Length: 589
Image 1 (cartoon, one colour):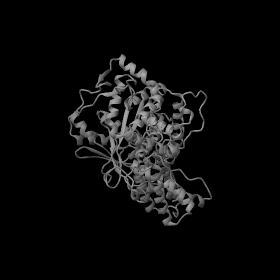
Image 2: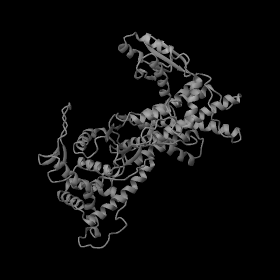
Image 3: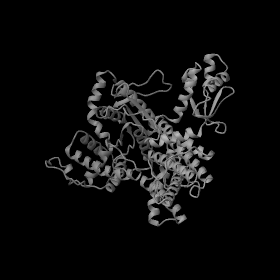
């Protein structure tokens, strides 16, 4: 199904062709002067330079071709050469009717043949999730849903940090605490226990203890390094203990991500890429890409067009150890083998931009990916406190994500209880739904690449550009629809949309007609904030419409049925969009 913007553009294109003007110039955009018109085209201005005519003359000729168009209530040429358009009310209603019949609300399905891997999350095992993991999870989950909705085959990969010295630190500290465990007995020949020797709480205490000890105790640091080497060389006891670490950590991570309504299709990590590293390095050597620099093996990735230095990508340190770049490249090897992706999208802190520039360039030079494979880096900004610095606890530490979620839920609960409209139990349940919306919308409504200030009071407000305001609008619509059905003894809701009778009804209809266009654009430009802005505008337009119309007491049954149909479509559009953003609406607030 074509978007309403495409239909208008097609109509103008026919007129451009009739006037002998290239249809590429018939580009239509939303008017930036809604007081004058709804849509506009500036193609006559560009055409004037090519066809050597005054732009207003060209615009007038095009307008004259469209005098009997079924789309426009008003179309006029305005100096110096603008074409201003206002749509017919019955055309807008007709389009909304077609949109109702489309399961994707008129959104173009443009990715059916593409496979996309989205790399987001990036938590370290044996460590709790903290606020630094929030943006990757929220943005990545929304993009996964957007890509999937528009027809892509999507694989969401958590990409665990589960390799390297941190594993050696945990293993060595566990050995000192429980030396009798069979994992540390070199003569052990039987199987290993199925039950892990630690809980997630134990691991969350073991790792920081070991990390601190390694900085103060040189012998312990060396022992942890040796444990890391033994693990990476395949020691069976250490590998068995490593699997326990993964099992316990992943179970806890899944529980915490579930609270964010975030889920991953695959739970792979750095360790999964290790088997691909030797052959990958050998291939780089065979291609003559690797050379020695200060004892390390590197690939040069500087390009002539660079305006600043791009350092070589270090593939192997002087002691033979791998680095993050090595693992990320080997992960691309694995993804190519398993998924053959058309695009790999990384949702990562923007401070890692140089790292991914090096990785992407190395991947292409080493032919790890196909030439047509798209590698995309979406670097997000930091979540800051009101002081403008990265968000911290009152004590100055990094806040655990579960505590942040609980704090927001509690704040929403208190706000709900101020109104005393529901039981405490229902308020608790509702606060979790509204709190998640406040948290996610507060993040996603900002452009991903920019930093933003985390302000709980603003995020949980039921007024303004916030998640709770969107949900409150939806709850209001649900209430009206419920009362209408109750008055009609449970009859099905009407769906036929008549032409708008006034300005506020037309304004809401025009916004709803753009749903498919906005969803598609949010996906193409990897910009969930555009979807947030859209549903805020829809909510505002609905509330203006609601203020102007007494829907449930309207005596004209036909008119009332049309309004109810409009509310039903409004709710569906909002419901679809918030699902793509990663949250849901309660039935009451």
